[in-house]
Amino acid sequence: MAHLAHYRESHPLPFVITHWTNLISMIVLILSGFYIHFPAFSNFMGIARGAHMFFAFLIIINCIVRVILAFVLESAPTGGTRKVEKDYKAWLPQKQNRHQLIPWIKYYLFIKKEHPLGGKYGNPQKLSYLLIPILILFMGYTGFCLWEPTSTIGFFAAGTELMGGLMAMRIIHYFMMWVFICFTMIHAYLANIEGFAPSKMIFAWKEHGGLVYDPDKGCIVGEDNLGQEKH
Image 1: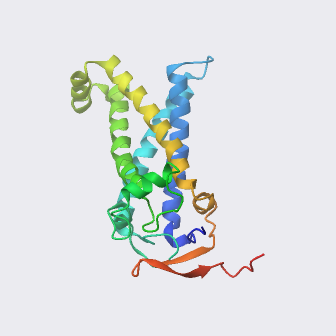
Image 2: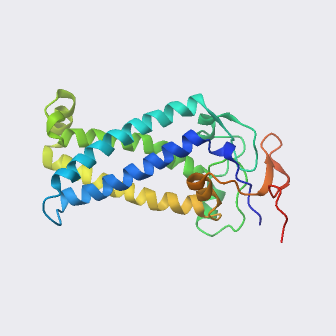
Image 3: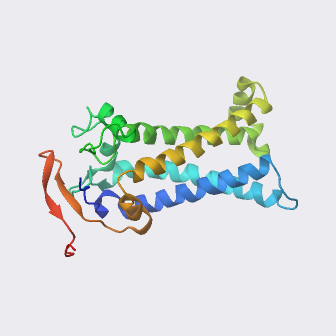
């Protein structure tokens, strides 16, 4: 089965930039976090802690900016179309795929061969993506509870006391790191299950031809090879 075309309208440049920022921040946070937890060699702890805190602030700010942009900028609500609407609508239940949770799960588990047609994100993707901003903010909170300059501030100290002390907070923070590692792996799988066209769109901002989808009619209306001859 041919796949939907991937247009830049699905991922406007500001969203590509925030996605890149998120990815780089997450990688640095994971690597520096591992080092802080298991210092493999000496004379690097200061750099690791500094990088960890810098990218912690960056990913939190980036997360807040991305959420705000979802209500400000427009994007295509599905692949295969250049029609646009406010981006936040793509993250909520859409008429194109609000009843497709089970078909999507079957497709991801290789039980169903045909890709469900509908919104830009599959239902499991929507659920996980909506959860990520909450997890990032919670992860940031646990980090500030552990960071010495902020650990004694009432808002963070209260959370540490509620969790049972600094050691319990460290365990939660460390566990959350593994949650993000698992999410990143699952996200890479879900994003590329159709092929690497979505990744090319995100990382190279490169359009990819395919089927044209009309979100108003809810069906395929043609095919767009972006002016390239078929071979």
